[in-house]
Length: 402
Image (cartoon, rainbow, N blue to C red):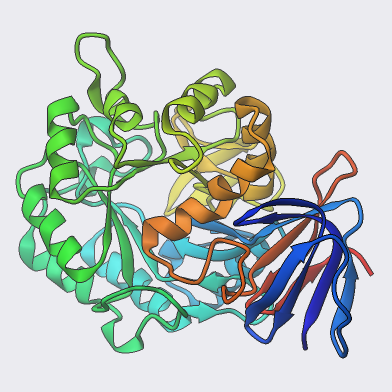
């Protein structure tokens, strides 16, 4: 059924319209514009007065939610993740692994491949984000250092081929298509990393620098080879120095790099969020949750792959206090980042959706424009930023308003 959202602040690709309207037709956006909508017949009318309409959020780095995680290797759990995050405005996710054995990783990838595409009542599963095992042990964070290993071409090919028979199942994915992996996070300074970057780029897989101590020159070389993304900027990476800018300095300075940000107020100080916003500009920041299974659950103990952890103040920590992901959702991240950056809606939609779509080469997602997928989120403006409506490819999957 067609949907007509009217009277909202519409954050379109061309600008912000107050008021504006948007009409869907099946999976796609049919038309949109400022002011009052033209006469339409047969569409469900949605009153967007006092609300903001944005492209649906895209979370490229999300391990879990609602008690489930990608590494569980369970189809039902992945679908539960997709449904949970949809209630927070997310219309597409990239379930993310962590460093584990090859067998456990393949199990997770096969489950993701089996669920790739729109989930009934939830977000679209775009594919998989492989975070580890090819990372620097010195910057492992909460990842299991005993399972970290150097890039091995044979293992890499096996993992990159995983789920190949399933196809992407995602419209406008822009993927050249071997397996289910759409992004790989690695430490580019490791022996064998350059060859692996080339292998990924040949397959159309995005490459991120993450859990790394790569210096400025090493990062510059990684960019030359095809790295275009930075994993949870400022976290688990070499810090900035005025004589050696380090990984963080390269992330800020190199224009080719898009930078993930965990905007929960714990992983990154609001002042550092502001620095990132100024350095990268509207096209360079990608909000991510890095959420674990703790997202959506009460605070307290949580199991992370057999390791004891706990949630405290929205952050997840191992028993020794090491940060181990978050319980964050992207609607909350957007509010935190808006306050820290001072950006208006004309820029904020890019950080929550457009830049993530660009990172994966998603040709029809991440913006409000005619012909793009009807992935929408309507945010109430009652002081809470509540997600009033989530629409995935023209289907209402979450609604708080009548």
